[in-house]
Length: 236
Ligand SMILES: *Cc1c(COP(=O)(O)O)cnc(C)c1O
Image (cartoon, rainbow, N blue to C red; front, side):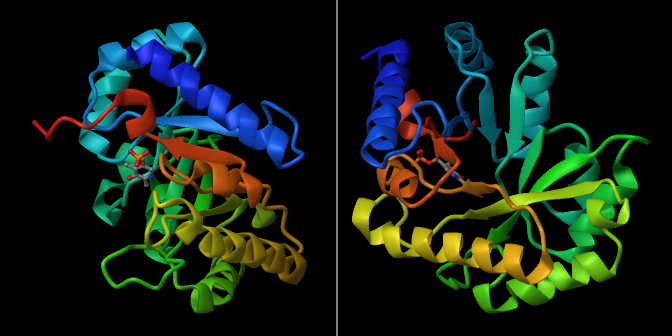
């Protein structure tokens, strides 16, 4: 299958899942996860109408951004970001999916150009796995409270705007096994909205093997790599 055929197949799978879940077709955003894949593949998909691309590694992402500077791509940062790399993210991505520490929030704010607003999702370590980053579900309310009380978000006029939650569950990519974690993420989001009076419309969840379940459970952004680009080449 060609890149175009694989992309079309994912678009069809997404539409099918949206219809099956009684959601409007086109209401879920497809984020093409392009890590380790060349800028030429990104450009090819962009010409077909794919606008959102996700990258994990900041150096790789920034190089591709430079190479594709003429295209109106919406870039998403979906990998862990070290505090000392905040300047590579701040203002360079339309959405940061992996905000999980107060230190990163402060570092991003320090690095943002004046008048820029950085949209961000809180990464939740939904399966409480030690090897994964993100805030534990039991800590997420405290974390949001810290951000709000610290005056670090748009609610207090700061340039960081919380837009929702993101997760990478255990057994991710394995269909039904991931579903309970998607449900849990949605419930946490609902709880945060109620408790803090926030608007958190985005749920970034679901990848190649489980985006259908994610859509059924309320995902607004699915992050798909392998099903679009094929297997990832080893990192150069
Ligand atoms: C690589 C990656 C994906 C895409 O995974 P696939 O299984 O290739 O679709 C999604 N989300 C994150 C955070 C990733 O790192």
